[in-house]
Every structure is written in C-alpha cells, then in structure tokens.
Length: 338
Picture 1 (cartoon, helix red, strand yellow):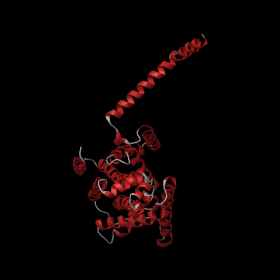
Picture 2 (cartoon, rainbow, N blue to C red):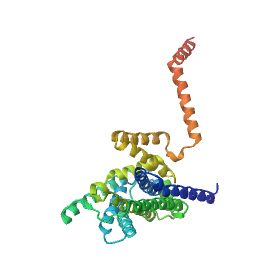
Picture 3 (cartoon, one colour):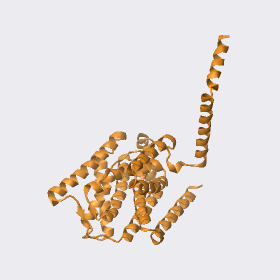
Picture 4 (cartoon, helix red, strand yellow):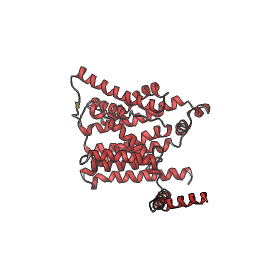
C-alpha cells in the first residue's frame, strides 16, 4: 500500500472507532460508559507517550506528573473559566513544566533519564502537598463546579481522537522522522542536521500537553482530588505498560492494549487486585520475550511460528523423555570405541 492509501485507511479506522464510541452512551449501561471513559483516558495517554518515547526510545516516567498538574490546574480554574478553557490551561501548565524538565534532563538516556523523570514527578507531588498544607491549610480540593457526565465523556472521546490523529499526522512529517532518527541513532541524526535537543524538548512537551489535558478532563470525574490521587505513580506506570505491551512504536498498538487493560482492570481490579497486578507483570514478560513488537505486531505468521516452535519443542522433549536420545548417545559412544 502507498503512503496515501495507508493514511486513508488509518483515518477511516479512526473515524469508525470514534463513531462507535460516540454511540456507546445511547445503548450502553453506566458501567460500560465508565469503563469506556477509562479506556479513552489510557488511549490518549499511551498514544501520546508512544509517539515520543516509542520513537526516541526515551523511557519517561513523568506521565503522572503532567496528569496531576493538569488536574490541579483545572480544579483551581474551573470556577472562574469555562470547561474548554480549564482544559486548555491544564495542557498549557503541563507543557511549561515539561519544557523546563526536558531542558534539564533530556541530555540523559536510558536508566538515568527514567529515574530522573520519576524523581521529578515525586518532587512535584511533594511540592504540591507542601503548598496545600502550608498555604491553603488543607490537602485536597472539592470540585463544586462539575460538568455533566455526558460532557466529560465527549471531551475524553475528543481528546483520544485528537491524540491518535496527531500521532497519524506527526509520523508523516519531518518532525516525526526526526524523532525516529533520534531513536535509531541520535549522533547520526545530529550529523544530518537535526537539532536533536529542540526536537526532544518539543516532543516531550507535546506528550505533556496531552497528559495535562487528560488530567484536567478527568479531575472532575472524582469531584474530590488530592496529590496522592492525581499524582499517583500507577497512572504513569500503567501508561508505560500499555504502550509497551501494545507496541510503543506502532500507531494502533497502544489503543489495542488500552482496551485489553481496561477490560482486565474492571474485571479483576476490584475482585482480585493481586491477580490483576500479576496479570500486568505476566503480560509484560510475555511481550518482552515473545512479542517485542507488542500486540500490534501479531500476524497469522506469528501464530504459525509459535505453533512450529511448540511442535518442535514437543518432538524434542518426546525424543528425550522416551530414552531414544540416551540410547543414541550410547550407540555413538560404542561406535567410537570400536
């Protein structure tokens, strides 16, 4: 398929999924709508994370920081501004923090970058907690101005669609190629004239803007927020797991994994939280060992290869357990002595 045909296909799939999600509140139960809302949240977070981190191979653990910044900004400004303005301010505040953070730590790679982004997330969380205690005299905020549930759902659907559309568009631009070049070989990208520092900061800020907007939109779902809730590291960790298991480099991998994880979360988290966490770890291990490209890389040939490997392994084990292998070694040893 040509690039234009792929673009048309991706847009048609996106609009089809968006149309199905748009119709869900009209025939689905409240439980289904709530589950879909969580799914849309992680579609936006993991798709934006994969767009930057999957392309550049920079493992960021700062998603929960940007999510929390957007949530607190929305909580502070929602009484004074409109719903759309509060979300825009949440995205803007997260973007500013991301530019400052990126300028400080994006010269590092690997474990150092991951640890520093996590450390700065914890620093922001404790700073907000200290501010709440010392200045406002309380920890947490009650949101008195809350939009209707349908407005929240439509907003999250719009954010998820815009994030996937942004991913479709950026991957076809020079900026997207620059991100991929940084992930392949950053030094070589520099020699080809790419301003890697500026590109990395811009990509990091783009990811933060999406996380901030999502945090601003989701904050009203709880009606009461505190630093422990909105700066919860689990939000960032689950975003990373969804992107990696789905396929961080791919377009549709994070979306597929977000649906799978949402179903697992609603099915197991309340009834068997330990099994849910074990399932996350097991999926990650299996993905790393047997599906490094993520769920999006599954093809019929993949299943055929797994079947051939399993069949060959079974034949080898039967040959060994039946004693044929030991007898063959003994005969070879006797022939050498003769």
